[in-house]
Image (cartoon, rainbow, N blue to C red; front, side):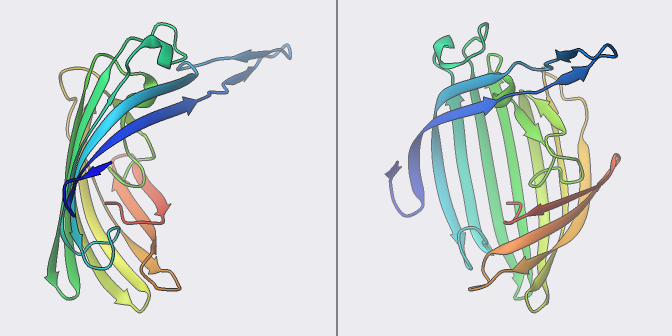
Length: 225
């Protein structure tokens, strides 16, 4: 990593992802078949990240003011870096922007916008995923998968009582395997956080998200963004 100053830095990355699917199918005659929706995979890519972190207050992970920005890219250099025999080279790009506002001493607003695209056809593990603990929280984890996406999030954060604080949020976005996006996805919800000892800066978060598919509950030891 190379730091230009306190906020700006450039990082080189080596990223290895591994996936093994165990799709057992028991036949009536007692035999067992193994069905794989996607191939087992171990893929290593090289990447880079340009980062500007200017978050302020509490800690870098629990900002109440400031902003955060990064551009991230991964590239598969050659077929020899993956266990998928017919995988071709690909490159993924994504950008993530966040802004934090202290509206009053009791109310904070956090905004996030992100988008990503791919060149070539990424392997399963290097697709983009939406849904779960940090984005489109009204849907289950990794509910949507694709090669390009966009999303936006807005969250109000406020104290409740002593170690308890609350958050109310909306998430929107879409993801696609091709050139066209199928349609805007919308979720909303609310939750609460518990500050953890000894310094009560780290928080355990409980979110209840709603979407057309119903209620989704998630628990996470961090803010969503």
